[in-house]
Structures are given as structure tokens and as C-alpha cells.
Image (cartoon, rainbow, N blue to C red):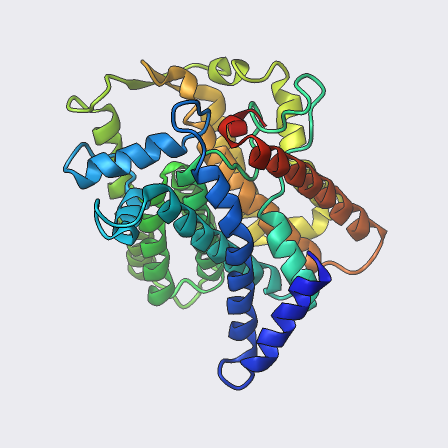
Length: 402
């Protein structure tokens, strides 16, 4: 980020002194800065040619318009309803410009939530917080040797630019992870209820992350309860809290499954067991694709393995990513969506959370060579992402190939 942007941020921060608390003020200013930086980016991506496009923007815009006219409904329609609400109906603002504003707002919300996760139990300067929060929003997988300079297709990139519902869903999954951290430490009724609401919103935005997160969180809480970590909680109280957090999301997932694969679904499809078949369509070296996608989390965890084993939140982030990746490895959709690789979205969303969790974990470690090297690996991911973003802005209609 340029010195002028940081100077502007400082001036606005000084002007608002006394109006808001210091922490909330800095977070809101970070969100505003992220929004302003993202607005021209999404203005370019949302305005790509709908007749010659390899992005998912035109398809989702068309779906939202049909939804506004009473057409078919996707099981995950939160993005489309928010888009219609901002458009003020079908006769309101243009859909592409409205979507650019909506996605820029979500990118700002993502930066704020990332900053909250980074600041937890860590001493970090305001400049470092801004740089890390924005950098984690653009980092992508490292380049491969078989399809260079493509860094996305076939990998589980922590960020994507071609799919609006994934970009829209990332703040919700970060909120789920943030609340999940608090639940692991203190599973109060209020925390569990808030987590249940956040999970429901994330599922309505895109269900893939919750498909992996729910079983991992349930197992983590059960193990902690069995080890008597929550000594003041009775078994009925624990089960009540577990139900508040997970049952609404599980019911939503069951409804979405019936809508997508039931007898009355629009497209005839089903979930089949097909190990590596779909992934092999996009990558000839799957293990390398995984390693290039998670080089930063792998390096960080290897350098601080003993500390990692004591960090509940990071363990949860890793197990969620592992389950989401296994879902992509073993499952596929039979029918016209077979090659769409829709089970990959869970790994992509979980990898973004894993990157943020690893960065927060790294900030809590003592200064030293290992920490510098780990942040250096993250810098390589960010550089790859900036390169990819630059190509997307030049040719937005080909964003999926970058």
C-alpha cells in the first residue's frame, strides 16, 4: 500500500478520535479503506462481457434477475437476495454496478474480520495489521510448473476472483471461525447461539465450508467436554449448547441437499463416490497442487509444531481444511455438473480461513528467523495473488484461467 493511503488513514483516524473507541475506530477505517480499494476491482470484474465470459458473474446476475421475477431458487440465495435488495428491485440500479458495490462491501467486512482474528492475543502495529489484512485478501496459490502462469485452476487457492458467491461467503466463514474460537474457550449459551446464526448465514451464502466445519467443531467440543475442560457444565447443558450451535445449520444443509439432489430438483443429479476423478480433470499433479496451495500453512505449522499442538483454533482450521479436501478428493456430482468441481469450494473457503488462522498464530510467536521465513512464504503467496489479480483486471473475461 502506498504512503498516501496510510497517511489518509491516519488523518481520518485522528479526526474521529473521541467519537469511537480506538479499537473499533481503527477496524472501521480499515474496512473503509478495503472497500475503496476493492470497488474499482469489482467494477472491472462485474462489468466483463456476459457473452464471452469464463467467470461466474453473468450467470449469477442472470439468476438474481430471474429470482426477482419469481423464477427458480437456488438453495444458497443470500448473495442474490442481497443483490436484489441493493438494486431496489428490478427497475432500480444496474445489476453489475450494484454487485460491484456489494462485493466491495463484503471485501471490506472480510478485512475487518481478518484484523480481529490477527489481533487476538497478539501485539501487532496498525501498519502491519493493515498490510496483513489486505494481503491475506489477495494471496493465492504458488505458481505451478505444468500450467504457468495459471495459479488457480486445479489448485485449492485461498482466494478466487471469478466466483461472486465465494467472495460473498468468505466474511461469513471468517465470522464462523471467529465465533468458533470463542466457543472452544467458553461455550456459553450466547456464544453458541451467535455461532448458530453465523453458521446459518454462511450456509445460505455457500454451504461447502459448513459441510466440513460442523463435524470438526462437534468432535472438538465433544473431546473437550469428555476431558472435563468444561467442569461447570452438565451433560444436558452441553447437549443444549451443541444443539443451539449446530442443529439449525444441519437442518439447512439437509434442506439444501433435498433441493439440489431430491426428486424435485431442477437438474437430475446425485452425489457419487469418485476418488480423484474430478480433480484429475484440472491437475495432473494433485499432491503438488495441494502443496502449492498451502505452502504458507505447511511451513508455519512445521516450524512451530509443538506450539501448534496446543492451539485449538489452528487445529480446528487444519482439520476443517483436511475434511473439505477429502470431500473434493472422494465425492462428485453425477450428471451435468460433474465437471463443475463444486466440492472444491469447501477446500477453497477452508484454505482462506487456514491462511488467516496461521497468520494470527504466527503473530503470537516470538521474533526470530523462523517467523521471518514463514512470513516470507506468505509474501510469495501475496505476490502470486497480485500477479493473478493484475491479469484478471486486464482480461476479466478469462479470470478462471488465472
